[in-house]
Length: 344
Image (tube, rainbow, N blue to C red; front, side, top):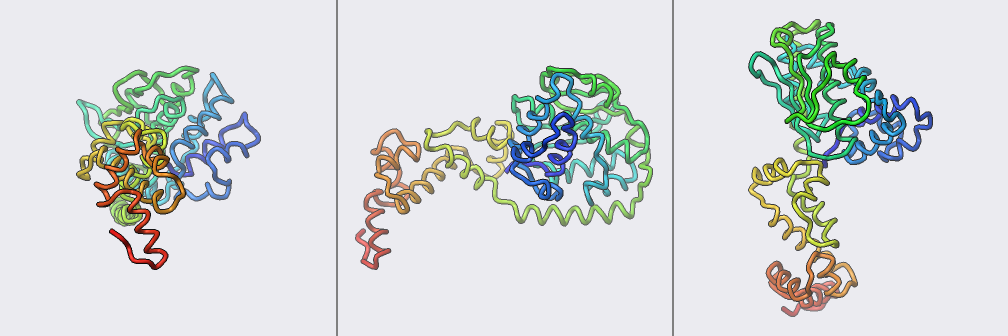
């Protein structure tokens, strides 16, 4: 599931100054105030974007809350992740580590840190979600990176350029005040450009030994995270299954629900040797077996619930999956469950 650390949601809620009753905001993300104190708790991206939009509505058109949220961030609040950034010998080395480990806190976007011309560019690529919450979330993510850089160097570090791929309505004054330059909108990417000399400056408390020690801990945390994560293709099958009763979903629809752009979605499938059509077939197979055995639905109802327009097409597919018709499969399995010999 694409998600972000509950810390971001908690901070956004704290800065919703025009909404004194915070209970409806916690309801949006379906967490209690106590639960979001733990940065390891992850909030689904769809709920997080809805939260941001609710707060934005209270301030429209003079949006400032997400910049206040970013300004409130401190390296220490990110645990080992933040301390490793703060203790890096230089800002550039800190950004390189940030790129590597940021998914411990943000499972939605992909980040890159690399030289480009005479500048050093920190860029972010997330799902192409055309909604205000996504735009404001991206602005806050970039603003937070700048805050961490400023804390690490203890300087008023100012980028040479800031760009966002989205179109933006409402006041942009808070962005100019925070970044020190007016961001460019409708760009080809979301990115902050730094002067190369600025990122080569030492961090105020940089210590190579501590940095390496903390990096080793982050490597271990990533390994543990990867071992707990459900396989990507299993998550795709789960989302397809939820949509089958309305017909076979399109790739773009599933990618959007999972918070991914179509290209990123297809690339992840390709990396695992999978195709979208194969996972649609697997989702239909799993759901069909579940409904044939565990429900009282008629076979024609099951056909529609698994995305088939005709029972005959469903029966052919089921025979391909199981080696027998759905009716024979149901009768055989029911017979076995009663202790009777199966008739195949």
